[in-house]
Image 1 (cartoon, rainbow, N blue to C red):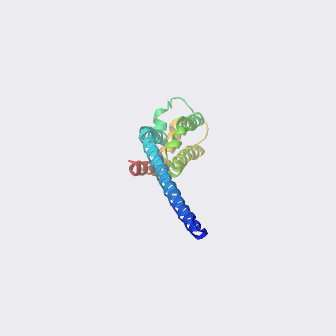
Image 2: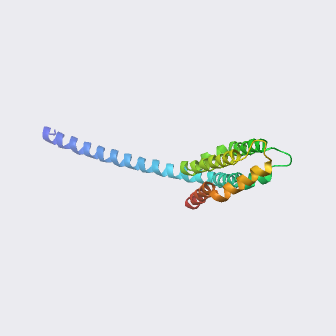
Image 3: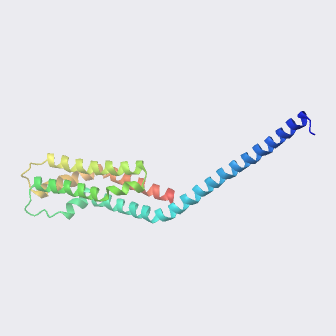
Length: 173
């Protein structure tokens, strides 16, 4: 028969072996979970890459389309008042933005906030140009003011937004 001291020693040894196996198994399990998460992330990135690249492209196209020069050139100015054209330009900016607002889910918060600021600056530029003419002025007068303001600002925020998007693309790809 085993003595009580031998039983205690045996119990301690069995407990140490059990704890060692338990901790090794737990460590192995955590390693497998990290490996699985990494593989899942890699697979997601493979499937998201084309969508993300497309979103970046579409966002840059939107930014180019809302530049004041581009907006004015797409409008039919014949026989319209400055007030009517201002409303059309602001509507065009808003529609471009609304059509592309879902693209924000594919880019960082910082890049998207630059896109929003660029859109807001362009809208403000149109409003300022309109404030420099009378509502009954011709559309040509308004477009002239828009071109002058655009020359002074240089579309800085639009350029910054495009640079932010390009930087983000370069970082990911």
